[in-house]
Length: 126
Image (cartoon, rainbow, N blue to C red; front, side, top):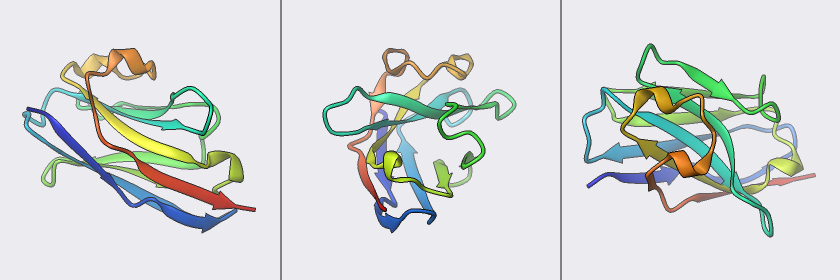
């Protein structure tokens, strides 16, 4: 069974940085897409970024482009989301999600991903 565990969230001031980790297990780390999503209170869960095992293709939502970087370490079965220049509007619970179809990314549609982690809270103070 696919399991995803996020970590690295916390409280940071505007302009600061955080690196989120998504530790994955239960599947072969050679044909997948993993996405990062976020959900602010009272709002829909929206896609932030994704990475595909096919040539390490990455994709970003316009709201985070140039500030966030997604990467993977296949040896550690972990996907990271480096978040720089954080803004108060980045405050949300961040989730990683998995699908065993590498070409799913660049989709940032939550319904295209099968398995989800429990989320990690990111709070950016102004």
